[in-house]
Length: 267
Length: 267
Image (cartoon, rainbow over all chains, first blue to last red; front, side):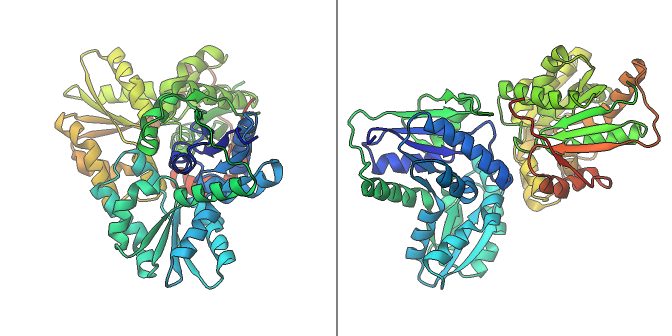
């Protein structure tokens, strides 16, 4: 069971940042990643649809005997993790709780900003998670739907992106948050611009790192940690692998050589 | 058979502009529209996936006894119409040929620009269609992946959109095209900005109007025109109808009151 892989899923390529942090922190673990590139993005779709997609994706990973499931997608974490936790017989972790915890630890003035997709923001998941940890913290939120397409266009450091970031982040700046949760896996690629707009004193919380720490804690608690020498990392996608491999390297770096097509619809 | 509806499909809401032109030109026709909002967008996905989605969507419409199928989505038109034409027993029309025809009629200097999604541009469908009609015309193309999210954000007349349009269209302007095909159903909503960037002398071709004219021509040729008084227009989507109705009115105008959920996956 210890040798079984950790399953990580995302709507597409963004979750590779979470996977990268997990493999850095836990180099002895086998992993299997699934990006639902045929149905990406999740951020603008309904709760019912995201629950269904997440369950189909999780079922595919369960057939590969995963010992632990990580929802690396913020939207899936916000909308589908509660149901997945009920339905699957293994531990399930989303990125919301780890990110919320890290933000609450970081804030001094108890004013936290959260940015994410429409679905994540509308769900209120970060605000509730933060409230659970510390009811005295105030949360300010903003959906930033153009950030994902800007990153996918590769305009990470660009005048256009700067202008969009100013538009989206103005209100959070005015609210004087001292901590900002990057509530979408694409956003860490815009760290420089976001930091320029918000000011250097605002702490940016990347849920990927916080999630990896939490994965390690839970695996250790459940005596499921592995310390294999020849670990395997496999990658699956639901659309053709070419674009995933090309764009994915920007998120994952070295070691993403091959991805296989997985047909998961109508399981 | 004449009374049977015209089926129109799109990856989401954009195809409503095509439907609107069809119902304007052919007020006596019944129509049924399906927007594949659970899997939108098509523009960045592979040919195999778009063929499969288009076939599933078309099969749903066939069960509603359509007499004619219109692929209102440029990406589906570019990638899937040839296969749909082979598989279905009814006439199928995409938006590429009508748009190409209109562009060739409009150009004086025989230099045509085409903008569209990654999938549409990569397919080369417009360039081939134009070449078939008039081999002496030169075609210049540019994918504009940020235009759709900008329209969906509602930033149709905005400094950001202007800046993005300048970036995307510079090369086409330098190529001195006198005609520009708006090869994605969202782009007509950016007509003002595109026209400002390209200059007032450049003719913008909206495939929606050209497609409606072609639908009328083919129905008439096949003696399938209807002139009903109490026509019905029904709308289906694959994700929840709320967002479709809210955003859809920007594309369709009055008359979009109700949409039903259609489960089409894994037919």
